[in-house]
Image (tube, rainbow, N blue to C red; front, side):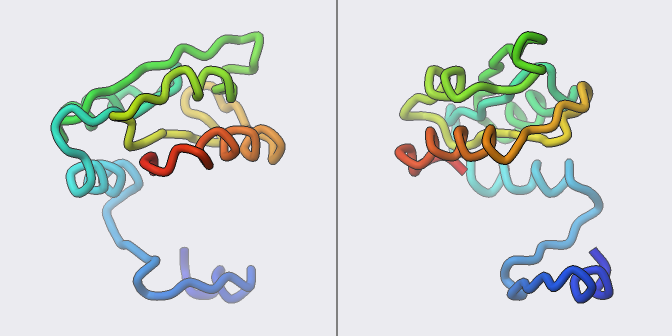
Length: 124
């Protein structure tokens, strides 16, 4: 985000909150490499961007695919998230808008997912 956009939107970030990279996929992969130990799990709601499971596997993690359905707008529900969490879960990949579906989570939906994760402090 260019400095003018930060200023125009009155956003404030500390230098340690900013990371530069060649794109979001590269930055996510770097984060997996830095934070995943062998066998730790990453929850990936499906449908998903094609490379996410491979990125997790290359970082020695275990992708956990959670099928989302049309009835729920191709979005992960709090119940699905709670059922997928294990002691080995370290990440949840959540896109809004989703790729490839374009599904957009409402604030209420995001808060409901956050409520599930609030009791599970090991997941990024």
